[in-house]
Image (tube, rainbow, N blue to C red):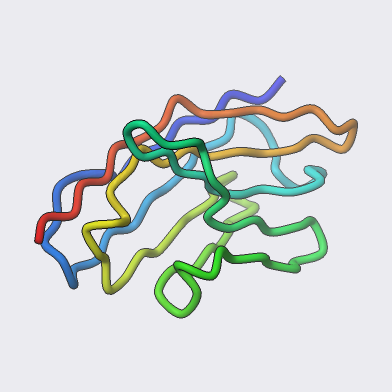
Length: 116
């Protein structure tokens, strides 16, 4: 079992930045992958970025060059630095991890609102 708690969401103007954090209840060292997804109102949840245990990243085209994922293994935290935010980035952002056994765990989400 892994509990995930996101933080850092809020209201920001277009062009601004936010840093989301996801705190895990146990070590993230042995996880298969970690990532961030988002869901806008009336839309399906979509991948933002995923990072594998080996450090390979996969970003959605819409966020490439603007968002950066990082992880602090010692602190058991996964971060998402979001720069040059756009109104279309408005969504609830969810932290996701996949265990070595292939089980998905999700946080409850943090709301990001980007005003134009």
